[in-house]
View (tube, rainbow, N blue to C red):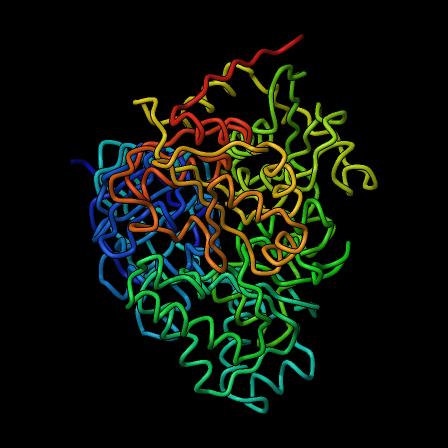
Length: 577
């Protein structure tokens, strides 16, 4: 096919995020993709059932998409793909993509594995990649081959130096040990990638890198611990890939369990607290409004920024570890007031007859509309959401978007205290028909029966246990239906002390701690089970690709009813103008 080059194309906007050479067939998507739970970490095949590229093998191909989305663990997934040699040959983004790019930088620094990453921020030129057949990346040029081919000159990574404190300079000279030195080197590279001109102190960190995605998940903490790494600030741990107490009785894979337990033990040895939850904002150690923190885990980041008013970027896995080791983070993104300003407004119509499932549904739907832009949402001023509602909204939002936060007028703190410019013309009227289409997409099962009810993604909150106890009453679930709740050890103990768990055990519920549904596989999910019903939009999105079952999505009451009758119940919704 012809290679078409125009002088205007040659001067288009393109820059190198990670240098390297590559060539291969192009896989193009105008829809972002989460590598975690969206791409198989061993084969490099896209498994996200809601993505139009499902089933596409990425190994050896050049993937072009606007940006990533979803989990902060995408950095760990791309790192694992590089080690398994099933990664794409290169990545081309329209927007600066930090999670996947950072994973590649870490793979290069720690394992000498890398692929080039290019940013084409001109939307017109990036759109022309849709018809491309193949791409070649040289030291200084992007060559696109196809009926609408073109070439672009590539600019080298920015060399502006980040301002360093005397303590930073000591660390980089090795005065505080090799682990801390390596950590700060990566943080400075990350700050340079973002265009940050300084680093900032943080008061705490949340480590998402506890998740086992493959051998790299264990190799990195082993190396840091061997180098006498010690966390400089208080740090909490995210969910592991195993219930530390019940893994044997659950029949979990012994090899994965052993690796997961060692990962957790290594981070504890480096100074983390024994939290193991994907909802650290439910802990007593949660940060205050305005606190500068270094959190990973997409739903936790969104909740911290949006609901707590703390300040963190959406840090990729392992940057969270490096921030904990140094207490330093790039002064960019949501750490800065200007990085928290909404760029788009969403008008939600008055909703009538919806139960609490509207909150995860709205978060997921709005996240899909806005991509990477921070939204200001109108229309929910009278909704009086609970912490559980905002948790569910944020998790759904973080699943479908790459934005680090949202504002809801009259609900979230900064939407009431900060003056925002008008978002016109970037204003979207939410269409009820589109919302119902999204509902139908999350309800992917077709047979009507329910075999498993899954609750707690993110981890169940105390107020959810209270409501669930009320809904269950004196009822009993069907014996053939599994009813499983994941939560943290802390919330489990609090719920036990309040008598919630005894009542729920009589209903037939089982409880899992330390891990979450994003990591649970067979045989915890019975091999014979065909259909799972859940109340988080996050699990309804990722679950079909992860566990190869049909999914139903609905409110907590609908989940209880499904467990009692073994069938999905029908829910009807309307909107008033």
